Length: 427
Figure 1 (cartoon, rainbow, N blue to C red):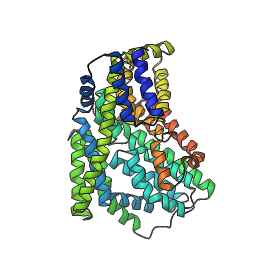
Figure 2: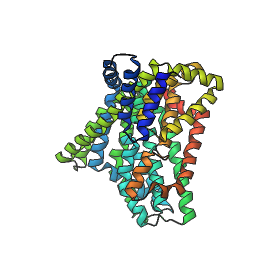
Figure 3: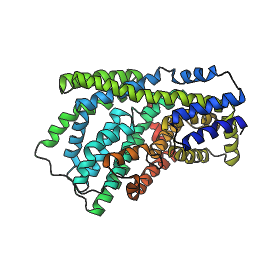
Figure 4: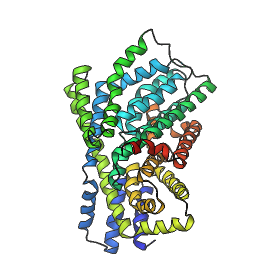
């Protein structure tokens, strides 16, 4: 690796160690590199920052965030939780199962793990505590289950990867459906096993007719994934247009069907969308600068050569990349990882015949696991903060959940048809 590349990585690593926000650490690393080596005029940094965000597909991010905000304010989240409670809330460990299912369903609306934690955790974590569930278990479960929202459509992480790698976002969305369901089944299994082992009960048995009423009330929310996935699958609209359609749908449902969405709610949704999207896009721009620096220093070629010397197996390459991504995901924000790593690994995908859709889903799953792995573990930290406990209190139960998620990761790594079955139907 060249001295310039070492400078880029070294300055960024130092910035992380002294707790500088990731976006500013990336910018500082690039500016330091340009000042020290004069590889290009300083104006290039501004150009690369803007170029990293200059994509029509990225417009889907604020649109999906806005749609999720409107749906939450309209009460779709509460209706999804009510449906899950009516279906399985009364079995032993039922509240834990409800947490997983509710996170999966809301993830199909939000596309964000942290949004899942806040929306579902705020409602279910206090209820689970009142029912006797250990707060560490509840926090670990909500944190890991919320990461399902990173895998299933409309995943914001997949939108960023698709834009960076020039891969079809529609195919990535379809590729994430089965792994997301496998994640859900794995975590439901863990939830039932641990709950029954500890004697944690469910809720009360639903009244006659409650399941039907809950289903009817939640039906508009359940139709959102059908609208998004079905529209993309049958070529009715692009992912960006699907996001815009989701906003229109949320406004109609919130104002005309539920009549729970006020003008103040809409204004609050716009403000929250601007804050969330602004933070995401700053990271995207900064990571784009950093990725340009690494490419200029020919780091992708150096890494490709190094991996080629270690293994000549496609699955060996995937396992090496998995280890690297799991480590990076424990320390860095997902979007920054995608934009930095993707240009580096794309030559490897071509060299070893790895489908970019398959790798994109594997990357997303890796980052979902990393979002619950200390020391960063943003989803886990958010859940623990809502529960009012330290991350250390959740570690006792976290290992079993991460083990289930890694088992799913290995399964879809070695059986790529699980990921590619639905995307191939789009061809």
